[in-house]
Length: 190
Image 1: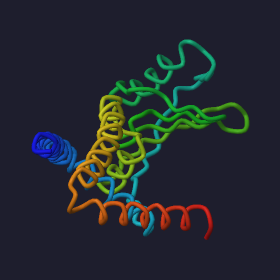
Image 2: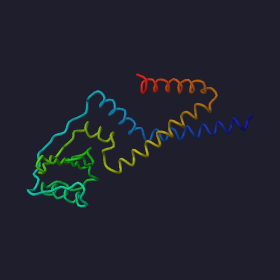
Image 3: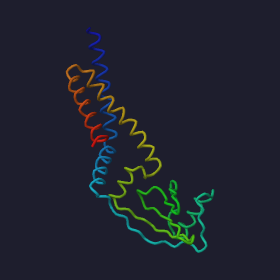
Image 4: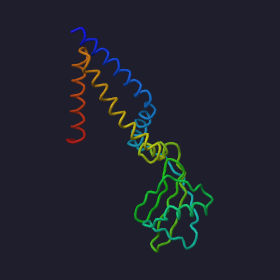
């Protein structure tokens, strides 16, 4: 019985340290997500200053073309803008450079096939929300995926610590059950 207690205590201590390290390392991202999620829901979405750009006459942007990225870079270069972007978001009649957490360009096709473009300069609030949405730099998006996995492990580790400690089992089980019921009711019933 004494070995089981030591084993559980050592396991608990290890899990607590892992939990604290993971939570500490990812706290800035978790705070950003909490803040921007609430701000967005409260309709505090930030602003973007739009400036019309010149699209060289005769520019044709074929979204299916293998050269579409180079064609977009040519429009940016013609306006003396930085031509680097991580990727393009394409919708019918619209091309947006990404990331949109920084200055970005939106190109739109008119009714007669002519293209127009705008430089979009987001304020800090808009940029933070774009990061939250996964519209930031590609490397940041990989960080978000890793953070999601680590968040899952942090929560799972916290539950394991709670269930491994006899003094916290009932409280952990009650909180998990109550949280699950509230989640299910708010998400699927109301």
